[in-house]
Image (cartoon, rainbow, N blue to C red; front, top):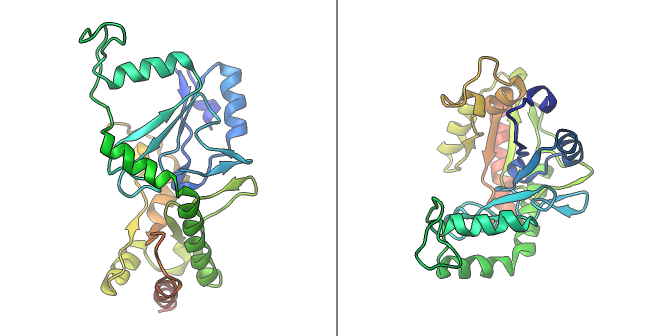
Length: 254
């Protein structure tokens, strides 16, 4: 699919490690090398996830992480880019600081932005980094508890974890199969009646007016229509998760 979309205008491939699960990077990296393209990893939802034992964000030419309030590591807002390319590193540091020269104070040779992180935000992020392994362990515990409670429920698809992947389960998301006769939005409303918040999966990019194409990707569209993200906070107890899985089971059998 990626190969068919490459044109002479293509500069980079941006694989997305979606919902905490790594993308299959080896084929992407080989394709990028063949076409001499950059690889920019979107790891916004996948802090600490691993592909064949390597941390996501370190596999391509650049990795991007989000520190928004609902991410695995948060500073409230903002994010981080990582790279081992010295030129990109230097350019990024200038761009984040109003395009100001590092050699001449208050001199702006290029157009830049105010993307600097405050000391307070950095301190919050560093504090969480000290316990990131504990957070990931808790996220995986939540996912495993959900899976145990839902594995026998017919009509749903549980989130995957490929043999080569370590999924950090940013959100625990399932699919409701059409053959159940139940609609995803009805499940969201049903859970809401019992004070359980959930949300639909994201819309596919081709559905957005700015990026719209005539032939939307059918798999992305199907997942978007059938997917629901369940409460996924690392502090959820086994009792709370079992309560949610029982509600889902009752809804699908009703």
